Image (tube, rainbow, N blue to C red; front, side, top):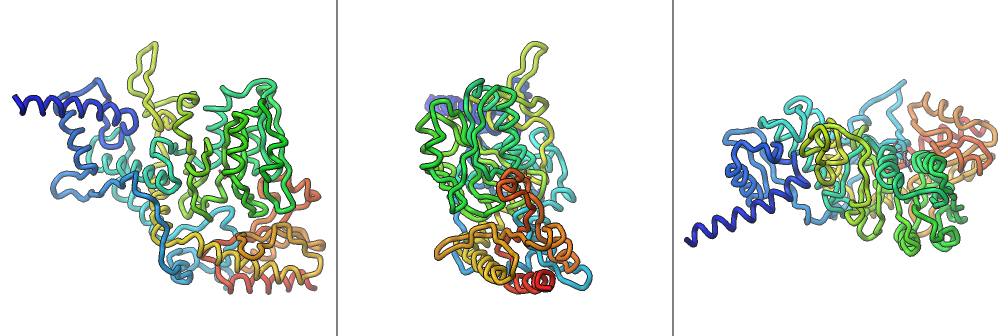
Length: 486
Ligand SMILES: Cc1ncc(COP(=O)(O)O)c(C=O)c1O
């Protein structure tokens, strides 16, 4: 009797767990469609086994085996001393040459290079277990599904979120657009207000401009302070009961400056507005904790984080799941379909219809592994700041050069130097440097409105990360002097 009771209790338990699993993890370990079971008992036993082990291990002799990372494991950055030269050697692109010059890559703000470990993970997927996720029931498809969901857990840990709050998209731009469609489209109406800053990337300006036009809402742009940041006190002057959304970049891609997101969120929440943070630049330079920031949405791309192109993340706070509508429809997001109605899966799968960027997501997981194993954000910041100071000091001595981005003072950080020359156009500077295999960004950096404020001229941006060296800065200075001092 006792045995029967405990078996019954186990079954009740597993049914509840199964519901949870279906809601959030359907496709993670178990790709059958609920309600279309081959054997209910077997399914329950299987699910219980999965929960008991908290790990999927394939059959005897199989090649695929891994431990599923625990969500509650906190992300801890590397605690040792970073060896910058050794770390650089992990990036194969730095072994390339062009026109007799090794690569001086000063455009990580546009996209960061990938270490071999990330490339290897992506190649392994294509070479050894390419399959679709959330549907295949053969062994290596299960493995692909597990790797994909494992990456979601890694991202969640990386930014202090829950895995259900992590939606994969094709990049930061797609993430912001997704937030506009699933939330803003049904919560912002005529006369409501949206606030952005004057330094937003097009990706975090145009979606709101277009939404405001469509809805008859008002779009306001908060000016930056002299320090190049959005001051909370200034923002407060723009906030009112009509404000429904504040969409703000954490780190400017032109200035490199960081705004106080926690302060902005608290001020916006005080008037009932939601906050979307464009973390495309900040994600790579500092530890992000979405719970501490208390933002409602957080968007970023993998490719600026030493991962591949074609994948990004939209964090959506669980408390607002119920406020989000669906906007893209297709396979993989549903439990059941009838001619009249469709029953959708829970978050986040209901926002990920169709075949996902599988290799890219797995690559993003590997990039986070790389960061966790090798990068200490404080040390990387110090290194980047030293490179910025060296370049800025040299540029200040070249007549006609104006530095647009703030030069960091004591205890401050910046990872980029943005500048113009009175005599030579930004495009010509970039082209000249390119001849010497030096890669910088020139133009409006997808933020034309701020450039209009600066006088409409294109700027040159040299952006740094931990793999950049003082020799690279020396070479850039040497090239710039040759060009600008004649
Ligand atoms: C601040 C900022 N936001 C958004 C984006 C858009 O990112 P993606 O092109 O990866 O979608 C960028 C890219 O440069 C950026 O710097």
